[in-house]
Length: 386
Image (cartoon, rainbow, N blue to C red; front, side, top):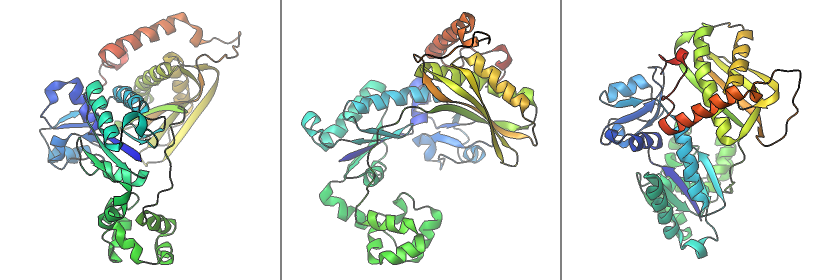
């Protein structure tokens, strides 16, 4: 049996957790620009039709009284890591599928923790008691059905599909609920008379493949309750990145540097928290025509210093000739090595990572932000930037 855990309105729930005064209010987490989209909406806001990926201006129209908050990814990642750690207490096979979702293979864990329902309820209880957050949980013989089950009784729900009930469940499962069936595919399936996943079995496989290609074969397997994907534990972090849509398009590099400054400090904190250093630093720019470019540099001495990241990203920006105004700016750090791994130092090259001054500054800033949040301390040049 496989579990799928889906945290309830995760970003918005974390904001309510950290600020109890938000309880009972409509809360929307999004970028602050009207051109941004909604990242998350709590259930009070959803009653007004606000949902994730909706443009912010539209969300404001639907729910003008909502509290709109910028995302705090550092805080969400912190709690996400704790959630994944709790899941690992019940099984070594935990596969995060996003910051607020994960699959857990509990096959063979019954002797330790009881049956499926007991394990599911224990997980929900641990998350609630430890973090004061709720989740919805689905259990089924495979990932496909577990994912659907977790969405059937939100929020704070639990749906279990036992092997002997799979066929009956599939017969009544609306076809649009199947992962991979988007608006376009749903329209084609509707024309064929498909209302439920069970209807797929009425058609020969060759016809489905002819109309839908590989997905036709996938549909046929799902209609038979077959999903061959397995739970794969998360690999090690390969890169760290962040990006932001600008309040308005610009080719002013001084403005872009302010965004980079804030992002570089965030990336530096993340690298230090992971106890890794980056060999490659990059910038990403999306222009007003939506064309996206990336520029990167590989440095001799792997770093986790915010100051080095700032220096390298500033230089990458200076070297880039802006053909059009930018609408999005982002930076990344990749080619990671563990902090403890030895590195070859060039004695003729100035190395900021060896500077005790910058190292101490990073440590002080990390301590303050961990305790009081990222807005507690910032550079003077960023005092007016949210």
